[in-house]
Image 1 (tube, rainbow, N blue to C red):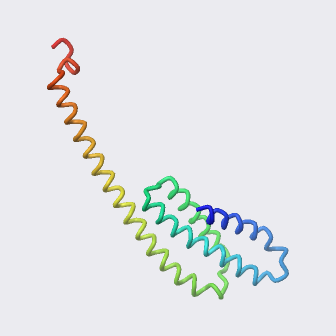
Image 2 (cartoon, rainbow, N blue to C red):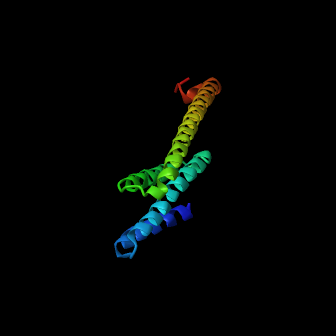
Image 3 (cartoon, rainbow, N blue to C red):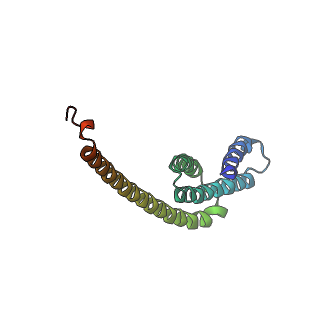
Length: 140
């Protein structure tokens, strides 16, 4: 995760320096390549974090990835990157499907856990009512 954050910072610094380079086309391709690599790395990291149920981190990474994608496509994509981007977009779509499936499974597991906890609470309450009715019905 640190590598990706560093990559984002490098991208921002490179963006700021873009206008002082002698060959803006080659710099732009290099910058876009690094930026696109960061998008792919963020996608992979999101899936990894989802597997570990680190939902707070997932949200932050997803927001960063979305912002980076918008920034990337706000400029024309260099022809040298065009085919790679097309291929990677298909991969990102597949990753998004995986993310949705993992999120759905996590929600199902959470619902099952909540139902189990509710059943345990009801059982404990029933036992207390039976064994210690005065706790629920004062004066008995």
